[in-house]
Image 1 (tube, one colour):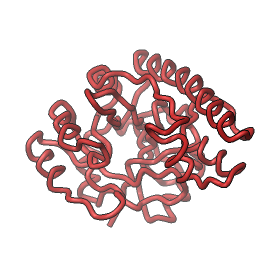
Image 2: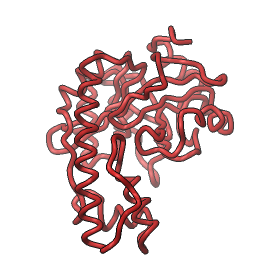
Image 3: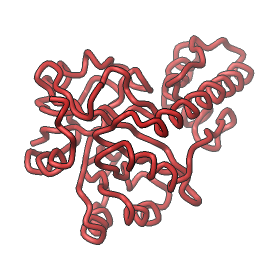
Length: 261
């Protein structure tokens, strides 16, 4: 039974729920704890590594994209504190997001001859742009990704992200636990999992499309003595589609700073 969903996004990045709406969604899913892991951004309304909001434990986390050789990976930091270095890097990334978002919007508008109902801003992600495309064109949200703004598509613009080494160091200083997100989603899962040698955890339960073989993830957990985290990667209001059971959550929680309760 899932009691902790440790991969949830809010309107601070590309989710649709505010932080105030999280507890009700968690209760509806039967979840006792969630981690807010907005993209490249610390949540301003989470003052401590772990807090309790309306009876739900809320872990302050972050999902940070990094450059790792031939592919980009997503790192998850849990129990986040606002260190000067991490705050500065997040602000730099958000400035780049604004510029990148404006460039993508300009390319889409030029290609389709439309005006998109979205403005470049901190926290803007491609899901926001995809939803805007769907509002004013015949493209669905997924179609917008598949044909316009996905990687290698005509309107795609790459982001400037930190290296794996710098990202890991920033998170290690600011967070009590640093792990690899959704390891089987990358083009080269083996190379991604090899980076777990210098991490604390890896995401095991995750709502992959179709069936996947978790054996490589289990092998990495054994090889590198990792904790298993897990979550739904929720961008909407449905939580608990993947996550940790009570024993797994207890092991993760023991590594987090609970002084914010």
